Image 1 (cartoon, one colour):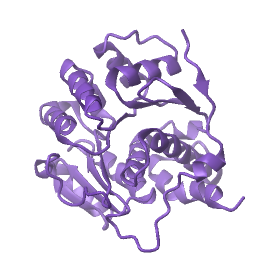
Image 2 (cartoon, one colour; image 1 turned 60 degrees about the vertical axis):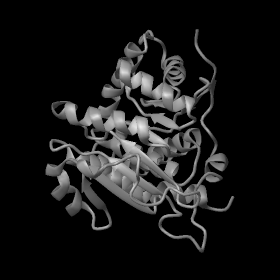
Image 3 (cartoon, helix red, strand yellow; image 1 turned 120 degrees about the vertical axis):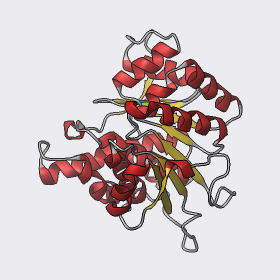
Image 4 (cartoon, one colour; image 1 turned 180 degrees about the vertical axis):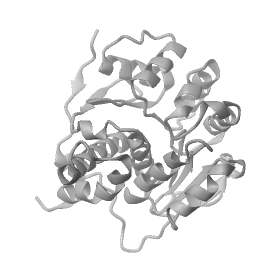
Length: 298
């Protein structure tokens, strides 16, 4: 049975969610995002996620990556703080975390199956110990698709700890199989089923992205463009949504606004560069072009 799908949110609703900073704020009040991302094979994923996060307003972005990726990440952008994965301690964050120092974590961008022993430990400990909003993306979704991952996701939900999943179709099928769900459902029904099974907000990515909350209520985001069908664009999206979570948006609002901004940035990049030539590296630079129309007075 197909679930009802709410239409894409209008610009006025999205504009109301934009987390513009107060005049007396500081970098920690603007949101502290921890990115656990970037294996030795795929350091660029951490860089792309960090680009999305910083452009989407996070006040402080730190990256925990494989040791062999550190030089790449540190050299990518001077404003980034980059540390080895071994320094990641989700039970005792390095800074912030109080009521006026909101924070969030994104894990999984650029995880490599060749390093699954190390990355599985990172994911499971983060699911277990991280109390603030957590977004799972990329290679970590394959690791989550396991009995242990399903159990820890359920435990997070029982404790009221927000969880966001951002799978594409193949990752969604693996998550469905682990939860004994039929993977051949239509996209909105699958998104709703995954959200209920994992106690998470799910943004099922595709030509149309379906966002389901933990009760299985679904809305569509249909602003996308084929220009976004390139490797790395999902890493930028994860960083954008993570930054919005770190700035205090609810999981559903962060997913809805983040997916819309990502899509509109893709459209702006397409207008400037053509659908053929847009790359993931371009998207963060076009985020201002996505924000300005929403922020402009009606």
